[in-house]
Image 1 (cartoon, rainbow, N blue to C red):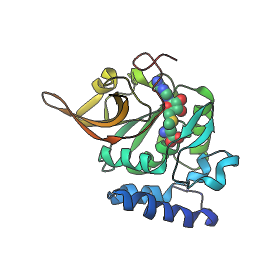
Image 2: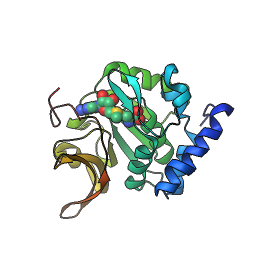
Image 3: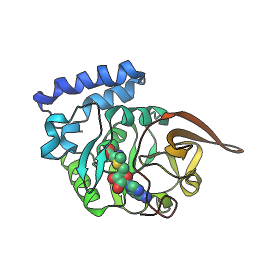
Image 4: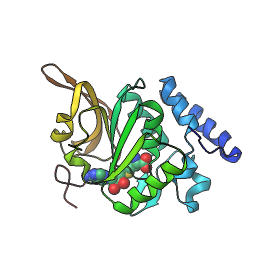
Length: 219
Ligand code: SAM
């Protein structure tokens, strides 16, 4: 896949992998490799480009943000992808998380409720040569019925409760990683589909924007 190489950013990208990810417990070598390859600078507006590898979320317009690199890596690591999976990415935003997932799985369907963000992200992904990502506009809290089932689902916005429709779209053994609101915090939670139901494990807190939609929060 032809990723654009910019030598000015290559060193910053490697520094981000070592200092922000490896030192904070990201150990899945496939995730570290994907984060070392995807040019984050291509997914932020021109005005934010010099801060592309800052250890923080950054504004991308429409009142939204590209997530902190460590958050993207932690979500991807929790999905335990091996390469052959079909993945749903809820909350495309800039398209950065979809790009990282595209390096880790066979096929990515990424859904964004804001049409302008979806358009810009889709163009950026196409320009960078990510042919295995499909960006669609819609309310991801309702899942993506036409494309289910999925081996894994990543949700990049906080849901008020376990997202029932998205969970129902997981195939056997599938994993869904989502921040769930509980006790005033956003708790990153991994749901695994087992024979008798779902196992849920909280992997840590983090702050996210709200999931807006039918099975999320009201706008
Ligand atoms: N993954 C993104 C990236 O790499 O840039 C960051 C996403 S940003 C933190 C969360 C995104 O979720 C926003 O773009 C927001 O518009 C979107 N969003 C919120 N509710 C949604 C919903 N119900 N369906 C789809 N997208 C939603």
